[in-house]
Image (cartoon, rainbow, N blue to C red; front, side):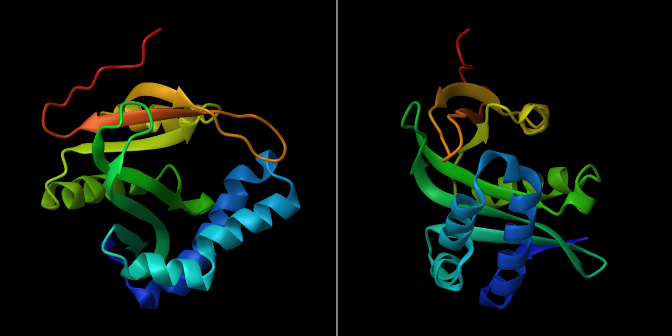
Length: 178
């Protein structure tokens, strides 16, 4: 297994894997038109080129036996939407359907924590669909706690997001009340 920082050479890999993975997991929450617009906005060549070279982002790619299995995108110095505490936002952690449940997520998350530590950012946060219980359980297993919720909607429904965070220094954050 190999995890490394992505470069412009990985643009096509990230675009392909990102679009396929997002469709595999989230087709039910978007109309086809809105899904296409979202994917174009996040995974177009222009958007990925800008993001891959930006010092405010880091991308990691995980391969196993030479085959791409997943990737992560980290945004530096971002305030979480609940407390406004500045830290690293784990914006994306995507895996192909065939790669889920095989331990790749834990390995990639450990690499994310390593990158965050190297940048001296002790706080990592993310948002996750309120309906995505599997992802919530995965993040909780790896030390994240729910700190709040924020609205999120697609053209089909109001879904909502939980904001989860992990303090890499103290190992504790104030959990979501209730």
